Amino acid sequence: MPIFKNASAWDSLEDDPLRDYHVWWMKVTMRHANALENCLAAATREENVQAFLTANHMLLIQHLGGGHGRYVIPKQKLGAEYVTDFVIGESHSGGFEWQAVELESPKARMFTKAGNPTKELSHAIKQIQDWRAWLVRNQNYAERPFTEQGLGLTDIIPNLPGLILIGRRSDEAAKWKSLRRQMTNDLNIRIQSFDFLVDNGRMQARVWQQLLKRK
Image 1 (tube, rainbow, N blue to C red):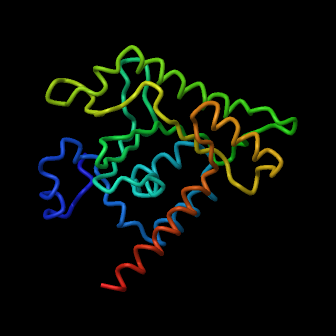
Image 2: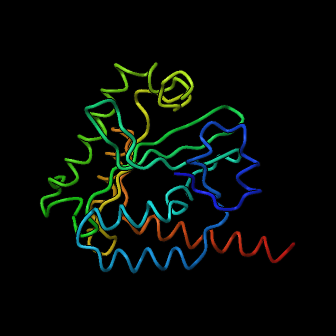
């Protein structure tokens, strides 16, 4: 389903094969970030947040830097075996870069009191590793254009970076931060609480608001 309702914006992407998933990242506002925080406070399941982020997709790509385009693809099918929560990407002068996003419940924890990954975090890591294993076998199909019956994920690599969103910052023990960083480095999977999206949304909303005031 096309993201855009603005005809002129849509027409400017006429030559972009991924225009159905293109996101105008500068459209993020403080209202979006505040609404996400309210959603997280009320959500009881991962599906509640999935629905919100599908409708407010600009919050998923504020940490990306691609100036030529940023993309959000919800529920990307990987053959008959897997369905991702989201695949997000950016395009720049060097091509495309993609990330696989796995959501867990905002009520879940990252680590147990003993410092071991919880079952929810372990499940999320395995999901991304399963997707990577699929890409090892099907990379050509995944990056092939839509016009050639592919998935259209240009330049995607089997070991694509992962992003896991789980729990809230206030529920995490500060002593496990170094462990989380180590896991990120070892696995090439960024592990963040949902506050990561809220913070980035607010920060970028302020940036774009200031830039608009100068015009």
